[in-house]
Length: 422
Image (tube, rainbow, N blue to C red):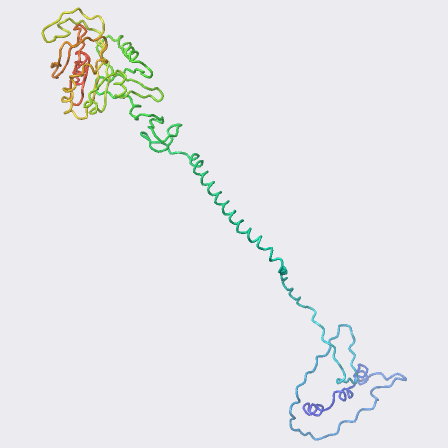
């Protein structure tokens, strides 16, 4: 039945359908209920109203299914706000009714603001380009000035670093010995010389070491300061230190050339101080040297005990002075060269070492050197006058040690010391 009604009303207009509708109220429901009260006077009962005749009983016929009407767009009903009364027209005419426009949604997405486009400066008028060559000509000159200034600054910094920066850097500490590059020795900085015990010297560092005794039995030192001293002053100091001796002995003379730092005379300085001359073959073969001072306080020599020369004995009175003599001890590198070199030196040896003879020696009493022996040793000597002084030039060789004395007693004493027989 539902489908039949729908089929029957589908072709009717909406207005006629709405006209058949009745509004049902609560009063109608109460009247139809049992024990409902009677209507008041003057009040018309709605149930007494004439009823519409029932529709005729038409046999149900299912018509053929019509083709679907063309689709049409039905506008949505207008929205109404809460609290407003919806008024429905009893006979609305949808053909003449115009629906109000849909309200905009409450929430709206704000539009994205466009990014500002920087304004392009207007192009200069054509007449302004005529003045541009002046500024364009200055631009390369400015670049050249900047480049030249940077180069000049770089050169200045490099020059400053070369001249000033190295001087501020700490120099390495010098090693002991000769120096060929800049380094620090003590409180000084130099490039050449010798650094010896944190002191700069113009000589080899060996001068800072005291002499080593070449004859181990003669090792007691006799220091003599020779800085700014004359030869007479040096000899006087040696005699002063030995005159108080009461026994025969020899001392190692230490000639000091400096105090701070302590430095000692080399062979060249000793030879220069006494005015000696040493044969070149002997000097070049020397590796070390000692200067010895000999004293014999008990000399009571007669002619038979002091010296016996060539033709016979010479008598004399005993000496009253103590015998003080100097000796030169040279350590040789090649012992086989000693005797040939000494033989060639004998012709000038007396004059070459005469300044080392203390006292006033006279002429030689023999024209040539003589040979003698003592305690298994061979000696060569030349006796000097006067005979009472016992002065002579004597030398002897023990292995690689050459001993040159100025008296027979001094050479014999050194020989016994080197052989450990004294």
